Length: 499
Ligand code: NAD
Image (cartoon, rainbow, N blue to C red; front, side):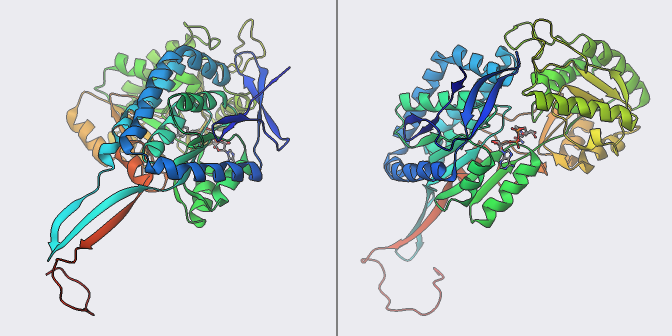
């Protein structure tokens, strides 16, 4: 019997009523482990109504009490850490230790959100005019929604719901239908931590549920993370419906390797950042750009044996470097990109397409692949592959190397490996990408900074987490006040100037 997952609406687990379901796989074995209900427009509407009702009381709860719920949540996640990490890796395929990192990077934003009462403070000008004071306050938007991808089932939901809820909003989470288990567990822990029913709801679904969010008059803001075509669609439709929208999309993250770089350090960094989580990270390095032929040859000599000896294993194998891909369909897509690269004339230096995991023959595994001599006009360079495939594009000079990430349509993350401070500084200043690493391959900013890509990796004007999250999830009200004892000067028909 396949387990049937449930939505979490109004503080209760409820079964889906649409009659539509999607299969949730165990990538490690290839089996279907559960089926997830796909919400109808009516189910989404009911969840929003419920959230709208609950939000009034939550907005009236003082910010410190709201933060205390998040503080208790932090402890509860620690208590259930191992169970959550196991569930995450069984649904997603990433190794258990990497699943723990997924949870940890989410918790760091929850920790940040515990301090949000400080950032909710408004401004005050005493005596802005004769007898006049001006102050501003930040108020919650009401009901807001988050639509999240399969690849960080713990971190990205927490990035979204923790700041939104700390700011006094009610939240509708529509997690990926491929990895829906952990988001529900996190919402249950929020309830256990004392969150009132209806403030955090998990409504599973596909395009039908997403469109219901985008068209719902009571949802005031939508945060999305996923692929670029869907990000753009959600941004356009949400904005057309008058919502505040931020959408984070796909990536093609370059790593420049300068002739003076420590090549051993760079190789370690590239292997981890290229193949960790089977390359299914929006901040994975997917393009390496060695500068100069000598650097390229020396780097290839180091990369080839490392890619050949990557240890692929089931998610529960603590010695594995990475596990299976998320679905059979995605595995086929990634392999077809490798076929395409060969056809396009790139040199496949390491071919992991035929890897089979002994004892797990139906799992969604492939080995690491390494391409050399990739050219900027090839589709394997231009498009996001999102798998364990690293492409080397050789550049003759620093300027040519810099032009690659600058001219690419994506602009999520980028890195440079060098010992030269001048080159690093020039790169950080001139590269047209949102997050930059200097000898750091995956420069995901910490919770108190903001996270966001440029160009077609991000739509909207505010980033995720950090102070931007408070701006995104609140609206500013500005009050100009004068009391009767102040100056009385009769009616004025001229715009007030506070002279
Ligand atoms: P996806 O775009 O397929 O799905 C993301 C969400 O959109 C899911 O909740 C899904 O149900 C929904 N969705 C899918 N198709 C839809 C449609 N036609 N209409 C409406 N909604 C739809 O992305 P994914 O495969 O789950 O995640 C991988 C992608 O996410 C990669 O492109 C990766 O780079 C990107 N990503 C970006 C960031 C970032 O911060 N920029 C972080 C993580 C992942």
